[in-house]
Image 1: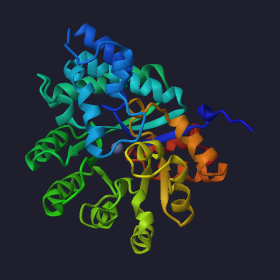
Image 2 (image 1 turned 135 degrees about the horizontal axis):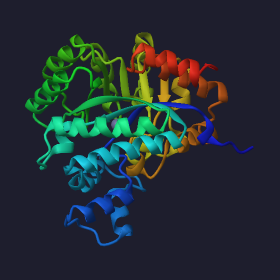
Image 3 (image 1 turned 90 degrees about the vertical axis):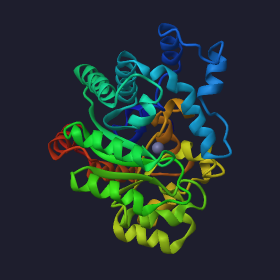
Length: 337
Ligand SMILES: [Zn+2]
């Protein structure tokens, strides 16, 4: 039995703008902007900007992001990559997408201000929405690799544009976390009405961070979180709280969070009562699209059609998009849930 995974209507809550830039766009923008990038042809570009084999540490993945970053310095490029991200998603069957990005990373070493980048992103969203029936919202990311001042600067920016962002995220390295410092940020974000989704429990050994991230940092959703499978008591606590895990199977394989895609615990977690949904994380970085992740879930992990629908229902329930948008999505595209 073969299935057209493109055709399943989807909601995606976890996709990074900086990890979704088409390879052809990287090459084209480099040419347009006259940038001396460290690659000579598309093969070499692919090697530098894509992970096709599992890497050793999360830092290796982060370096792949830095290989793309130089082209993100103009409003036109940022507007273009945002439009293309939504166009790609729509063609994968996505009717609602939460786009996340790090203002600090996007504008790093560029003349672009946070506000310039945001205006360009919003223009890209408007371009896409004029052409496609796709809903979109923005999540601002604070990197745990940068100083806490960077987090404060990012959150100040987000709160200065209260109608632009729907959510707040912490990403990157989660070893030796200073929960008290990050709590000052998440408390402010929450008080301002932002949804909170935080990367946690991604690498092996980080499952201990998940419950404190929910309790201290007010996360209602966890990016990844799959490592809770290693500890029954943590799993039970996450289940009791009803927290949603944003699961990204291929991403977890390529960052060595699981030994193979086929051994990903997503379905086991779902059947143990954990709420979760399916996401691509960084399509270009991992050389995949969201349809591929649905295929992996159904053909390799054994998700049934009903289980896929359950994950979609959770995504619709937990999206940070507003109630009017949720009602529209339910009526127009997800009436079967
Ligand atoms: Zn992510």
